[in-house]
Image 1 (tube, rainbow, N blue to C red):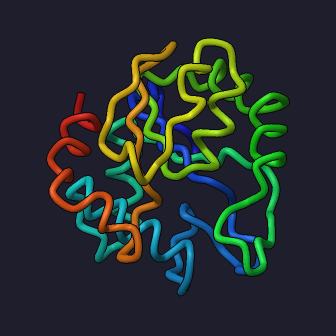
Image 2: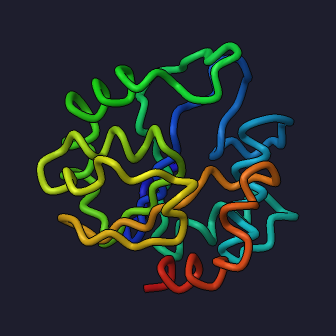
Length: 173
């Protein structure tokens, strides 16, 4: 899927799934990370996800774009997150350039790895020390406003429950 003409909100996930096929923009539904992310993100954005092609088109029409902080597939094994050193390396080497190219109005950081990667970039250093769980729903004024959010799933809903309206307001601008 091509990026929208103007990226209003960049949703920055942690990393592409290391052990599964497919991903967010692939029309075919697959179990696991991709399905969880897409299902929950569409629900938060009030996009009907029953027809994936239509839902992805609506996602793009609204000026949304999803990318990953870690630019390579990483099998986390038993670890709950990608290694911090990998997230920071990707932030320093690639994410800053991607932000310059996409030029989003706002950024929604979906998880700690995305926050760690962003914190290495000039204008986003204020994010160091911010955590997705503790600060979920907080808007941090950086080079561009950043909404701190957990990876959207049933497992992380303990941090985001009751904050869904804030998420939607941020996304809608």
